[in-house]
Length: 449
Image 1 (tube, rainbow, N blue to C red):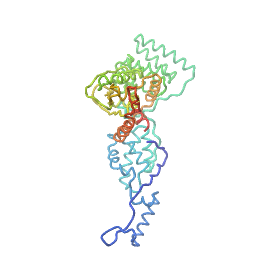
Image 2 (cartoon, rainbow, N blue to C red):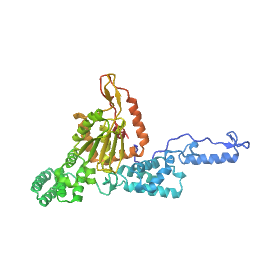
Image 3 (cartoon, one colour):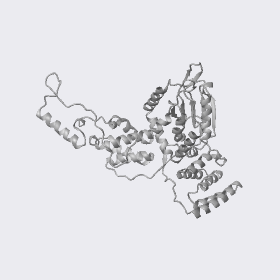
Image 4 (cartoon, rainbow, N blue to C red):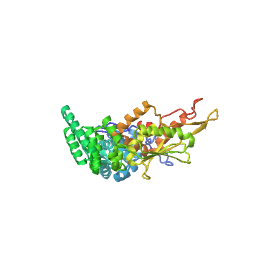
């Protein structure tokens, strides 16, 4: 849902509305040729009011805007905004900011909507906050652009903290900080954790953007069992947003210094660490795809992957994920390379992501079994691009989370589009090849939103 965040939302597009007419005195039938002077005067006034409100004459008698069609649903969500889906709240704020007709609303209605929009402005992810700000502006409430917030432990709930973004330091200070940080690491290797932490903290004071010092200081805090400090400095590392900081976060997934944080939901959210289960529902025909999925996860730095089989055969893959793994979903769904990949949130089980792999089979002209997809393309060029995309997700997880929320909040529309896309390519098996023509996965659909 792409839109500008200026002070006044665009005017709604015109659509058809009922024609205006009066009833004749015979049989109550509509007779557009007969209008009393009083009737014509009333219609003229109504049309004038409509024009004054920015409506065309035929819209002065109807409110069939997108906001009106979902107003009841949106009002219910805004009344209990803390319990509503973030994706739904963002959609409702956008519909209100663009399409709502304020001249048709009473004071009580406006007060209720203002309360809901203010909650979104103050608590929702940054994009939704900007949209809610537009809606508040339409209601006459002027608020500044909110300070950026970082997603919380559940992958969606923001907490009030400014993004870590200290200024660059002179080259001489960077060099001095590097030497101090290396001395701190030597202390950690000797298991003198307090001394190592002190030196690493000193190095950060010398160069607050030293990724080497920040990463190893987080290690020291984990070794000292100081969970909150370790999480804070891993988040600071993520905030820097460079490829080098992202690579260190990937390293943290398997670094022994973070063993005691491996099951922490905030650690998983920040580093992208997941305990993954891949289930083959297709028997021997699915083995090439399962092998490619394993290669994909290995090249992305995921080491905790378990493979299993199931007799519950599927024709459509499904990805189940926990809230703290939500930012990883668009990338994984795209890489799976299947036209009808579905994905759903879950809070059950010990795995952070479960992939139930399945696809359609068909008999080739030579009697061989042909499969619709063999899963991810694991050639180096493809995986290098995937690693860059993963780095972007680790630096700015909110964008990926928002994309997933939108798809989850409108599953029928999205899944139907993806299914139709899959049907367009079915039956395009090339003679002599053992796979269907490859098509974009659901991740591509997410990325287009």
